[in-house]
Amino acid sequence: MDIRLQGLLVGILFGVLLQRSRLCFNSAIRDIKMTKDNYLMKMALLAVLVETIGFHLVAQLGLIKLNPLPFIPWAQIVGGFLFGMGMVLAGGCASGVTYRIGEGYITAFVAAIFFGITASAVRGGPLQLVNNWFGKPITTTNNPSGLYAVTDGKVNLTLANLLNIDPWIIAIVFSLLLLAVILVWKTTERKVTGLNWIWGGILVGLTGIIAYISQKSYALGITGGWINLLRTTTGELDLSKGVPYNWIGMEVLGIIIGAFISAILSKEFKLRMPKDPKTFVQVALGGILMGFGAGVARGCNVGHILSGLPHLAISSLVFTVFVVLGNWLMVWYLFERK
Image 1 (spheres, rainbow, N blue to C red):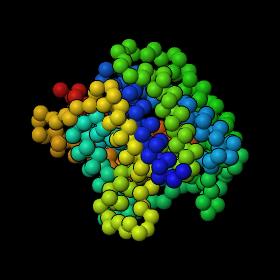
Image 2 (image 1 turned 180 degrees about the horizontal axis):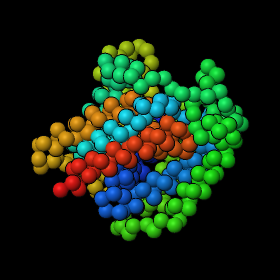
Image 3 (image 1 turned 90 degrees about the vertical axis):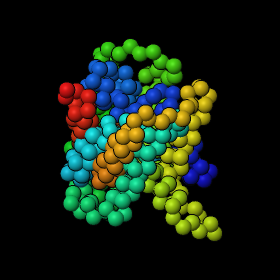
Image 4 (image 1 turned 135 degrees about the vertical axis):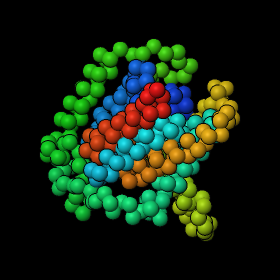
């Protein structure tokens, strides 16, 4: 099967699950601070738990090589913080605004377009020079159990190869910690019309594993997909050659299609316009901050949190911390300071 068709099918599945579970990392992080609601956070933690075991298992079986995102300290610190602020302004994370396009949210479309344009400018576009400010990735030559992808003899940093111990040890300890949090942390009550937090977390996690096996180089992502869609669609296509859409570009398109199908079937699709035109300015600014942050940090909430934390990647651990800090600062500024 064509790799792009695989990406499209995985994206459709992911889009359906996002729409039915309402999983959005902006909401998951924001709700913890604003309302002490942990429902979406527990769903996200369960998805990460499933992927942690799943990624290491399929790597052990030789189906993939674990390929954590590169660790560039200041890039993940600054990028994560800006991304966290941006997703509050945009009203959703990278995956959140993407699937909400399929539900008919015009503001989500605006946020996603500005997100994609800015990320494209940072990655190989006119703003690519900013990456020089943050330096080069810190790598290692350690490759315990040979589970990690190697480029020029270098391996991107994880807790396991930093300590040079079997990745399974770290994965199992991390999974047990997540399981303890999930079991002990009382779940906030919520009326659910779609998938509950347990099924949402399990199915999203399994989709991440399927995505890794399909794409081989990485699991689910969003930023690279928007970059691919925008550059390919607005470029000069030579139809006599292979169309340069790729797996992740088709995955992002699939998310929109899947969310649209799911919203239609559940009678939740509706074109939604904001009452205040100033909202467009706010979500555009949020998209710009998310695009810049994800561009320099080499990933967004899906690339670093959903797909990166299961690797125990140092880059993703740092990014996650600063996404939370940036999110909570903007939540305080917009909703709590008065």
